Every structure is written in C-alpha cells, then in structure tokens.
Length: 260
Image 1 (cartoon, rainbow, N blue to C red):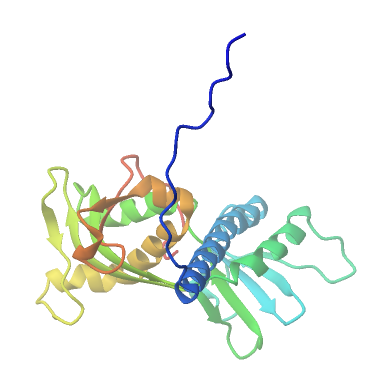
Image 2 (image 1 turned 30 degrees about the horizontal axis):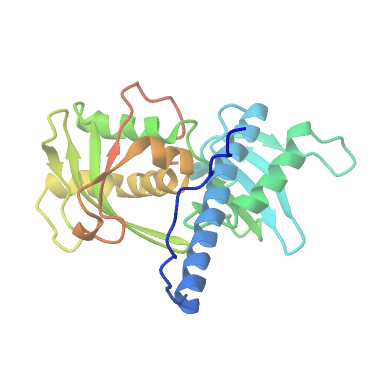
C-alpha cells in the first residue's frame, strides 16, 4: 500500500512580529469607513433607480429627515427650480389614508442608508417648507454623463489624470489634465491656487462641481472604481492614492440630470 502524500510542503517557523494595536485599530476603522461609504454610494444609485420607476425624469427627491425616520414627500425633474413652488413636479405623496406605491417603502429604507454617506448634494428647501430637503440624484450612468460633459468641449478626451487623497468620509481630488487618445494632455487644469488666465481657468470653474462629484462617486463605488480607474506610477507620486487615470467610457453618454 502506498504511503499518503503530505498535503503541505515543509515550512519553517513564521517570523515573529509584534502587533501594533494602535495601527491595527486605525486600519480597521479606515476599512469600516470605506465600506460604509461604498454601501451609501451603491444605495444612492439603487435609490435613483427606484425613484425612476415612478417617474423616469426624476432628478431630485424632496424628503424630511427626523431621528425616527426618513420620509419622501415628492419627486422633482429639475432641482434648481424647486427653491420656490414652481413646476415641474413629477409626483407628490398622497395623504396618509391613501394607498402608497410599492416602490416607496424600499426607497425610504435606501434613503436612510444613502444619508450615511459623505459629500451628498443635499440642499434645504425654502422657508415655507421647514425641515424639507432636496437630494439631487446621480445620472443613470455617472461615468457616461461625465464623459459627455467633458466631450462637449474636448471631443477627443479619453481620460482624466488626477490625484486622490482618500480619508474616512472624505475624498479630496486634484485634477491635473484632460487626456487625449495618444496619452498627451488636451487641457491642463490649473491649480486652484494658481488663477490662470481664460480660457484655461474658465472650463474648470464652470465644470468643477460636476466633475468632482462624479469622480468621488465613481471612486467610492467598488465596481466603478475597478472599471474606470488605473493607477499611474507609484502611489508616492501624489497624495495617498497616487496619480490615477479615470478612463472615460467610449460609448456615448446616457441622457440624465445636468447637475448630478
């Protein structure tokens, strides 16, 4: 009878390293914060999809937040118009005695998760509706909407070159260049502290808010991060995530909110 084969190759003793409890705790906190942000961002996209089952043009949700609950009151097509009681209103919650649509309960549970995230586009409603807030929703395809916005001015753009500083509940972004198909810069984005002359400064000033929100969203979402970001060189080059290329999708962008 043949002798049994060993299932492990010979091993030596493992090197002894003392655990640093402070560093281990900080690392665990960082991973937890990243996981919470990823949960909030993925819930954010799902919330938008749920709201758009009721009204496909939805760009913002009007809600009321209390310690006990999050209550959705209305869906709006263009949030810029709703600091005042003007259309277009897409849907308004019926009185309490009326039956409620099937999507609403799921949407309110998602809203509670979304509000745990950071850097959300939430604004307060006007004084005639105290305690009400508007949450702008992401475009149906955030990367495609970002690509569309950039290519309105730079049709050959294939990527953004940027650096990221990622900390718990905060993602700081420094954009450097809009890159063309040959890897060279189509447009150098000036440093915020170096006020360049127009037209170099003009495009970034008009589009910075949208670009920064989109980049934060794509980075925090695990699937988007893996799909769209490519590290460039060593992380020590710039900030704690180093230089990153945000590769823009090649397909035309989907229509969506202009300010998500």
